[in-house]
Length: 169
View 1 (cartoon, rainbow, N blue to C red):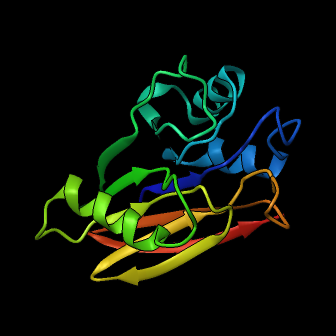
View 2: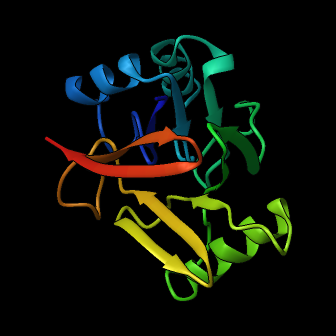
């Protein structure tokens, strides 16, 4: 059963100094990691790549605060154990965030597909379904404002089935 560590909005070093140790442990333990943007620095990006075990084990997208020197796309798609994940940051107003994320996921995976959409940006943990698309937001892995605590998601995939747990410090 593959384990996927899902994080976003680390904001290191502009809002937080470092990634919490418990998040580091989850990233190192995972079979694959997803980062939904807003690393904030090349150093934070490289740290997450290292924690994931290299670039092949990390799916990452650009957030609205990421420097252009971080060479990741704005949207990425991956398949794990029969589950299709579409990752985007979700940049824009909080109003309409769910619909924007679902539209991006459907656009990437196809109108008839039911992907799992992973996005960040709001720093709020989300696990809901909108129009047949499961929408996940891990919150902020460092608890960067406006979050009130550090959070992430850990997903377990088995035979096309997805179980998701929220983790917090």
